[in-house]
Length: 348
Image (cartoon, rainbow, N blue to C red; front, side):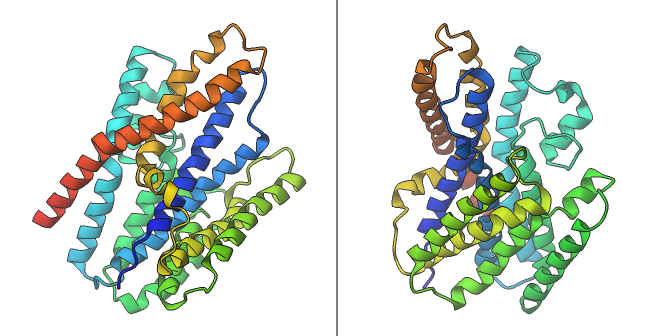
């Protein structure tokens, strides 16, 4: 019987809430002279790492019983590309329109056609794309392209090929700084999080932990504890980068994901209240920076910024509007787009 991944959707909800909390913390830091949100919110960076592990797991899980070959690979690439690009293009076009109306609100590179083309294609470049959170999608697209190649080969080779891919990334991490953005992407340590998710997809059907909630809890504690340990020894650098980031966040994110998969296998749904947020996580992820920028731009003009009153009122209000706006985008824009793309895939 196929396991319905309810808790994985709940984990997506946790991941996107972490990212929103991180950016809300940064916005408060920028626009308010005092701070309500604690430095713990920097841990929100780990939301991206959780997303990458989930992505690898889903890629393996959704293709494991489908065989291999060019038709499967082409269908996989179309479905994944249509999942990422249409909504991303819509939100990026909205940001571009805002940039034309309010010059200076985005990067000066928004007038550069080459920069814009690479941003829309999610092609690696030295600068962040126009929609800054798109940097993670550049990694996702790279994952999808490599995984598509794996689908062209016999499934029995997949674990070996994934292992070789991981070895290549580890070797690349030991080399000098890559000369190009493309080389940096191909050998980036964050790819290890995707590969780890793939191996979880291979492992999970064969191994069902007896205490999945404990496994999930251990993952949460490990994730927070690793970040606390990093902060303790690197007080000037709140966020580990490169391989340090993978070592800090991957073990906890991997255990959290495995715990969620195991809870689904046992029919447990403790994250039920987060499943709706998980469904809308992609829309929330893409749009939350726009809502934050639009609302918080007026923060600097409030007359009572020297007290915590503005923080107490605006922080929860901005969080609510951001999540509601992303959920609205999911229901009215993303869901219809996904239905259309699936119909096209079936027709093809």
